[in-house]
Length: 425
Picture 1 (tube, helix red, strand yellow):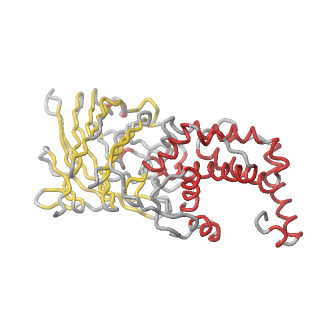
Picture 2: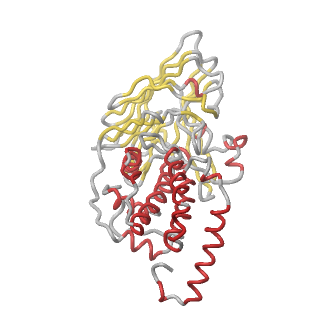
Picture 3: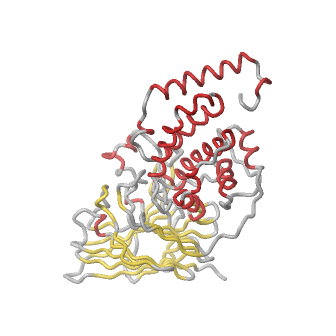
């Protein structure tokens, strides 16, 4: 209606105006909602943006009466992210929440001529940087929590808006790249074509998010990430100590990400019996037959971190588990080394690794495509194909590789695994 103006008939414009007033404006002015009072997640920005933009386009004379309320809701949204800009909900929820946040303030500035100071804050700058750092390898983004969906293609329009507002390069696809979407095609074309892509080379270096304890390392040959944190994060998975290795558009060691959203998926008593949410789908140990537990007290402790490595104690992620379970992850030139130092194991520990690529055993060695897994354990690993429902409701398969180590007397043990690129140079 705003764009077409009088090219639409008066009857249609009146119907649009009345419908928006009845379905959004009056309801918002006469009610309060969880998302604008207490909740702190992406939904605050999504809902406030939709409401605020409705005012700015069709009811600008009424906007001043709700301006402060809307701005407070956007502040709630910002509180859902770590001060260093990390989004524990996951990358796709960063796209969802932050894009709506930016769309609102973009419209606000263009229609009112006022610049919102919040856009210049250190927190917002860090949130923008997260969008760059979370792009791991080609089409892959940080896979953690329920945000592990590679949907940068489906959100190219709003990501372009973020690029323009903050003069950054989120390393999107080539200019004009579009994919099927429920969003109006015309809007997508208008936004995505109004930009030029530099197609910068993938960055090399290390990023470490201290609060959420997430380590990201790119060395030019591959990309590697591991997370500590705790097991009561927003859109939580029980995944303390999980890691992933990416190369050439493939996820060799995988965090399988989000599962199918059902009613049970969002009930805590059922959620962690669902494969993608359980630690059993992640590359973390199974201690004395037990998976990790849900709760903020089940967490990692960072012991050290530098440019190429990070070390956690993840013993507290398990209930009545090991006394100490120290894991050091080191990114080497052609692969990743993971070392475990275990104390207080009662019977056995199973070192589990997950992948979307079917592992192969050749000459008693395990290969995931051209990556070889080596270990000082002499046991033969158990490989299993696990079926689950993915985000789209389709049946998907993730492979788990289990190495079992039994406790021997009172001796506490150290174990080492290496994930090395064996591709012929």
